[in-house]
Image (cartoon, rainbow, N blue to C red; front, side, top):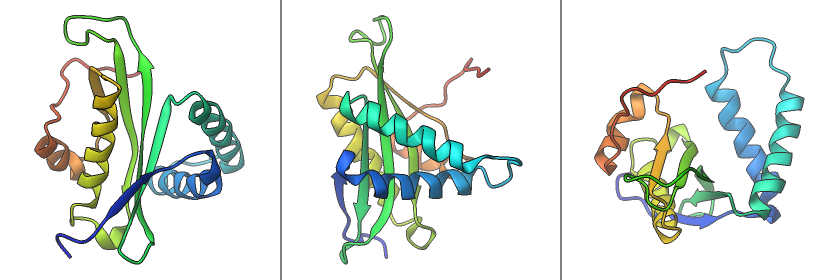
Length: 156
């Protein structure tokens, strides 16, 4: 399947049902080992997030479609502003999240096409830094695109 035909398009508020379907799919896979998750609350909070951030254009999601028009992947980039610095003169940051492809097409470049699509959007917005979190399995993909591991990064 390498070199498969993939179309990518932005998603908007009109896509809210599809966005939620895929967001929940991703969360349920990534957090499958978490106990006592109130998925109804998670769903409700994500609906509110999308309504707010799609309107303000501080989140830009997209979907990947195969040649038959079926959704085969998704991703989104959250935009925020930090104080400008020598390594980010504009102060604009993008955080890539929800990078997901359906299992049957993984390893065929779909995720890479989605990420490159969002990086292009970030460049148009003069985004100085783009971040993401990675599973071990995806690190080689991100490194092939040019992402570098961040030393001294902590989370609380």
